[in-house]
Length: 69
Image (cartoon, rainbow, N blue to C red; front, top):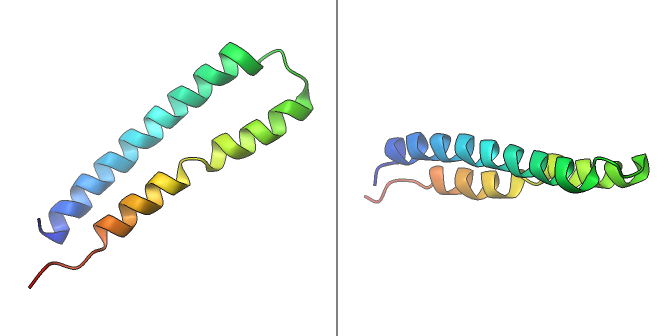
């Protein structure tokens, strides 16, 4: 697979993973944490806000691999 195809596929996968992460985070918040005190919200939003970075880093690393000669 060429690098340009990997980049196109990677961008689509990153956007889909962010949308899924947003939906999951919203579902957890509305279902479990909405009535919790503020001090529970702070660590939740830190984890939920940064949690999409690891899958994105893996995808970006895959996208940046050079083509095989």
